[in-house]
Image (cartoon, rainbow, N blue to C red; front, side, top):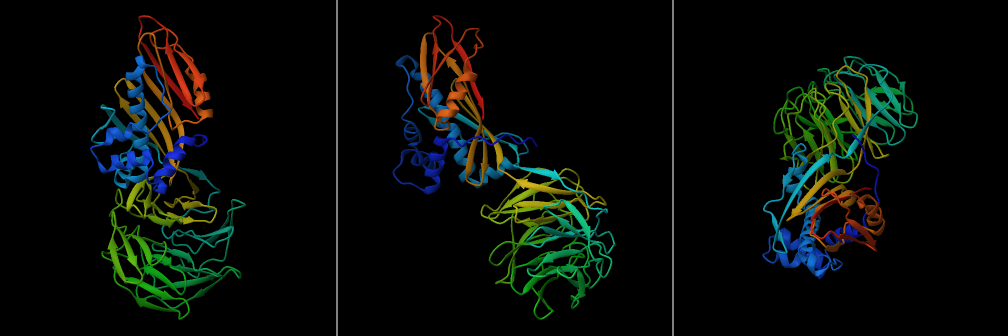
Length: 491
């Protein structure tokens, strides 16, 4: 994915969004936008107060209202993305197809049509040093909170490896006590130890000492672990475990007692692609796998399971989860695909993310590190190892009001908004002039816009452009020709 350079955040937009987020009372713009969200009948009157800086000659009053209305449409499109989780999920899952805001809004008695499309999912994958061996079923990752990530190579092998983040290099460590296959899993429990499932249809549970590079066999679980076996550590004394192997069983392991207890069974049988990740509080999230879209949450205190929004498509071998802190859980679909998703915990919605560099299958794995990156094994009998760096998704918003159309590209990362691109198209009647002022633009942005705008219009004559503070003045000095103009600026 091409990642645009990060533009300076537009001051007007910052004020706009800050006001909305902070819930300020009595200010015109937030009131207008909240009123729109509530569908109040006084929408047009409130939108008419969005900007007090718009200036125009009397003869250009129609141009002014249409430009102003289309600009308000852009602002409302951004507001919808920030505040309407259902709408944003619809846009994110539309696969590059524009989604219209329905119904159209009325601003200054002018119908304003708005559409939004996600043009970039918001993240980049980098190829890192490949694992020295091919990774297959049972491949797994664990991060120990410093410079190192540990990995099972799986594929019915005892191979165990350590990756240096700073050195982008791999070192072979002491082999596991047995061959690791389907259901192999790793989890760092804090301190000196990494805990491991052998999988491979075995009742085997191990502990690896990071300082001494040695393995220890622990108390066996209550059943044979296979495809879909998974671990999650909620802090403290307990590790939670999917048995997988096309079973319902869900266990809790006590580190201090070296013992197992049954917990409430999973809602359905778990198999290849089953995965667990702990977030905060009492919550562990889970993929069922087994070529289904099932996504669940386990509440530790309640010892109960809850259904959450299904994934976009069926998850199979190589399915994996990683919690990045904050609001997002990331997921590999596996199943021989490049699908990569993120889930908003607060919104309860899935979003498409930047696809992986290649297909992921058995042995695929994810781990989140404190450098705010996610690392991934491809599996599929390959040695590929990747790093994902998150950034805000990029959206294109188009607002059409009468003869005026504004297109804006914005990057949204949580509640932060950057304007990356902005263009306005419209017409000027003979011997008219008017100015526009957008809250989306700051002085530097408008000044640069002027340079790009000094061009011949599609009617073959020049539209004069003048920059005055934050306003762009347009003049059509022709006596009998209507000017069609387009102004654009890439940040």
